[in-house]
Length: 79
Length: 79
Length: 153
Length: 153
Image 1 (cartoon, rainbow over the protein chains, first blue to last red):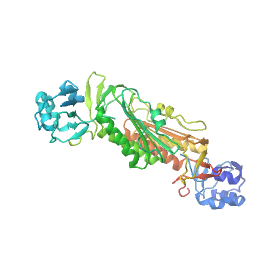
Image 2 (image 1 turned 30 degrees about the vertical axis):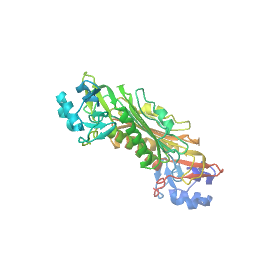
Image 3 (image 1 turned 120 degrees about the horizontal axis):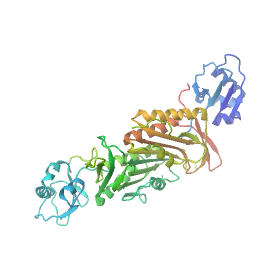
Image 4 (image 1 turned 90 degrees about the horizontal axis):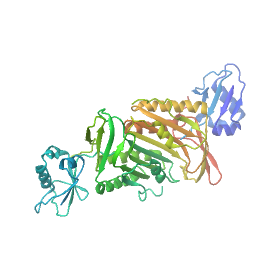
């Protein structure tokens, strides 16, 4: 699936998008754990980070599909 | 003294300003009575009309002076 | 925020068309993160749904202008510091013409919204300006604001 | 008021300078007696008083645009009928540049004020846009809105 990273999370990951292969049945929470393992700087950001699937917020328990586009979003700052 | 009339009151009086000679000690109330005697159409407007002396609202009991400029003002409609 | 007083900012009663952009430019400074503007416009139907052809406004300028300045000064301090400009037009106005414009700049938006709304609310209540509605059927009538006629002084 | 829906009204995320006058012109109709506009502007000092050199904004456009449209649609009905336009800019902004503009027209002013404030409040809370402050000392930091990070979904 495709991960889209924004703002500070984009800077930590070093890319605005990345492709992740996750096992069948992987949840949004597993995707976050996978990212945080690769980029330990993400760990303290967990509680303030929200995930979107295909443009809509998802809970951490949601099961992801192969073609999903997952947005990894720090707190908003528009306006 | 000078009477300045506005909006509907101006139309009733037929002039935007008029000079009135009132006796020594005349109040704002006497000025209004004098106007209403000349223009009976003003009578029903009394409760909604406010008077200003030299640009500041005055009570009906205020004693007027010869050089005063008295604004006779229906309810405001600006905006 | 520096320069929050109304000194030098547009606060006027004019006979010519109102240029909102000029008001907005006047209130802005580098200290301001928010600008709120209000424009009152001649609309095609009166509150009682009569079709409107135009409006005419008249003012008692010697009293209206100081009152407008007082309102602007109040608004510039009452909710936090704000820079306030306000212009009211008089004379004959056509459909779509602006009768009044208010522009407020402040560091934060809540102050600017509150100050802008305060100016237009108080203007309607306190400033000696009168409005005549001219209808398409040829009739006309003077229209008072709600709250424009409190118990007499 | 006719045409109160957001259809055809500007609702966008753009990379170029915002023209407020264009938004105001788009929302106005002869049915509208009131226009309220909001402009968010880059100011010279951050909330913590650090001197700001400029801001940069980035968005998740595929999510931000529908959310912006939803907010505009909500605002156009929630307080009474209103016509709403909103544009947010992304990219590098200098001091004094507008980052966001909202224009609302309605029959009466209270509706326009409420709808305009609703749009900017909800935008800050719900729309995936991020702001980085660049300071004069060369440092920079990402700044979140109050309420921009509620309990995660």
